[in-house]
Length: 482
Image (cartoon, rainbow, N blue to C red; front, top):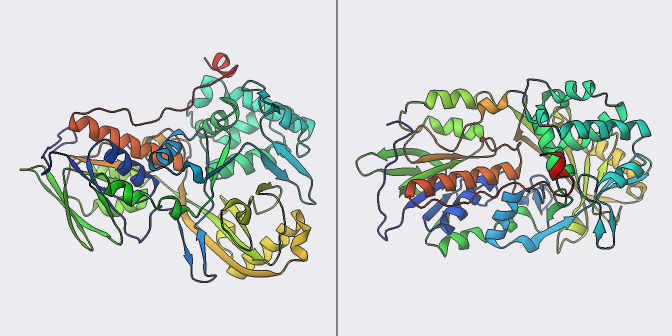
């Protein structure tokens, strides 16, 4: 049967049923939205906890619960925020409007919106005073950054012409300071890829949403609790609505009964029957799973799309000291291999000790380091920014490599990003790699889950607006960008 055919069967209580495979952000957002819409939802997760690549676990080497990597969101991430609001955990998000950039030696620059009591500048001027006063950038750097951001407000910056971000930046006469201290660090880190592997529209998306469209969109949010604890209420949320979560239930196969229009999902722990299925998995896991589905016209084309995606790694180094080495909650570290510092003892409620997490984005070379090499390099670099490291005693250390952290967004990648509708009847797709308009982020994952939920509600005959739209340009931006 083709993709346009949708089969129906009534559950015993008259409600349609859905099995969501994958307990990451995409799967959880889809499951909770569908449960809220009145469907009976079963969420299947192969591990014993939720969160996927945005999760936490007890690290056996240090005996501490750590996130697999620090994940942040921004207020412009309307669907992640909407998912958190749905499950009632927004109080566990710490928001900040400022970003501290530190040079080796300790000199600091603050980026963030201008504030004078309750007053501020309209977008896109709200960040201008902090950029102008930032010591990390020369006058030539600031002029170059302003020139590029003005260019990114033009409509043609959202068209994929095949040009890489690096070529586009060179063409717009970016200085080496602007390249190394902003584009390679802030933007390439946000997209987790090298500048020569990024399509211009995705960098433009980040700049517009985080820096230009609104003064609130760039506010950064970080969880006050370990990530998997943030999702601890999801099982109860689904259970209260007639569904549930199946942990440690690895997918083993699927069969479609076309006569009654129902799917049977085989897992390690048993079978689940449902009217609809959502595959909410990373692209490589989806590709493996396709071999266990019935033959369908269009499946080869989907496999071909998946084959065009590429992974990029993120590494994190977790350090526990016997004393505090900085009073900052977080910082951007300039001109070194380590990019981001998060003071988890200050950010996360109830954390004891003095726990620092360092993040290295888009660095395949760092991912090749041994544990001892990573420790030596990060301690030496951290001491350049925070001299107190030299007096402190390191008590524990963990090195985490997330080799499949994100998918790349090179020119032309949109052709390899499918929509929620799949080649199989009543089976839908979700995941950050889907056609969401966003790069590989929690926002893209949540958007994909909400898009899949919308598609199922439409098939049920109860269309609902589940997807949260992007924040609308405000201030002067709404006139400049119109």
